[in-house]
Image 1 (cartoon, helix red, strand yellow):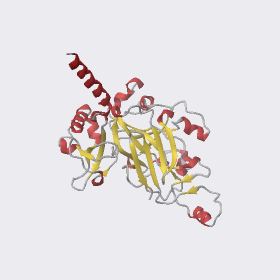
Image 2: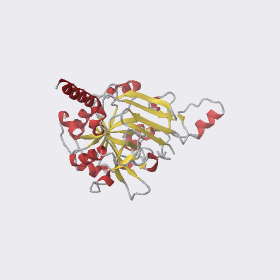
Image 3: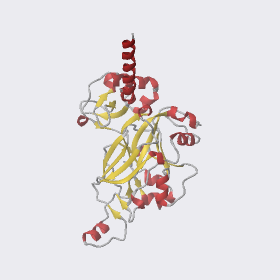
Image 4: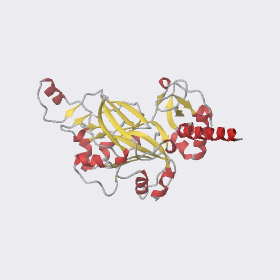
Length: 336
């Protein structure tokens, strides 16, 4: 009896140690396409950087878009959990095209000046209330799609951000109830045309933030129970391999719960809505001289002649921007 009891205790301890690594704790929902499939499908990324499990093949009754999936709530998530535990065939990553984890959201809500260290680099006070703006849903593209430089802007900049994906409809949500309305988290690149954000359009931010392709998302919607602490994640951005932003989400002024409570005072939040929670320091516009993701013939001519450009340094088309957040993954976007 004593030996049997010890075995049971040892088994329980081993199970407890393995528990954080069980499949149900690492649910990474994706939208994808493949040559042998018709249209977009829902899937599960088999670990950060892994292949894809086809959820629609596992259960053909599941919807094929993330918004519809999230609208079905716990019932759909339960099916995904069973698929993850079933050890299904995995499509190689090289054979699929990743789409944004959410396409055509009802709204993309953004938060400005929401990192303490980002406020410091601008020498401005930390906001006392969240600063809210938006992007149009048409700006959303996939995690490996190209960012198209618009001819209307000469000052396109990078911003890595933690994005919150809403899973449950709500209005006037209390901060204490906010996480019940969250489906999960993903990586966002808040591409920004600084000339239009800061000087044009009456200095209203919208147009500078919402050009087509200005909101890459992905690679996966990592469910909230799969993230140890969304407010203690390393976050970084690299341009052509060089680290330009490096911080931690613990620098956020207003956390997820506060943001949801604040935003839902004004608008109803729907499943699939995306909240970009702000960016850390290191953006191009506040560098000396400023650096942007755009080629300028004048600046290039100065550099090739060995002269010092008095205007902002502008990078070449073809730049590669990598936005990465611990536990969530990395998105990689070529600038064209």
